[in-house]
Length: 109
Image (cartoon, rainbow, N blue to C red; front, side):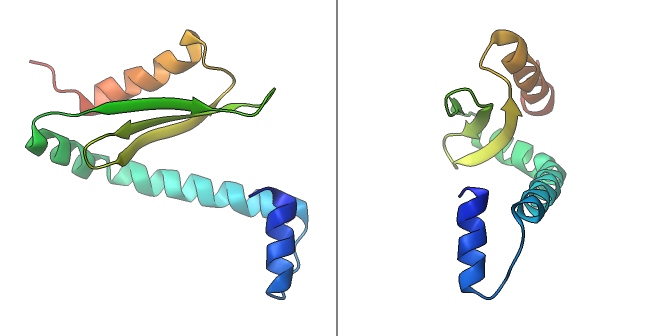
C-alpha cells in the first residue's frame, strides 16, 4: 500500500498519522523485520542442508523509474532468503546480494 492509502485506512480506525510518520514507521518495521530474519539465518541454512538441495528463485520488481525490490527465495519451502532495494538489476547491484547468499547458505566442499 502507498502512504496515502495506509493513512486513509488508519483514519477509518481512528488513527491519524502524517505520511511522513507512516514512512518512518514503515522503515522501522522493515529494519526490525530484516534483523529478525537475519537472526534466523542459521535455522534456514540447517533446513536447506537437511533437504540436501535448494531451488533458488530470484526476482526483481520495480515501478518505472523506481528502485528494484530484489528477492531471493528458496523454492521448496518458499522461504525468503533475502530481499533488498537496489537501484537497478545491473550486475554490479545484484552481485553483492548473490555473494552474501553464497557465503551464508552455500556449502563448499
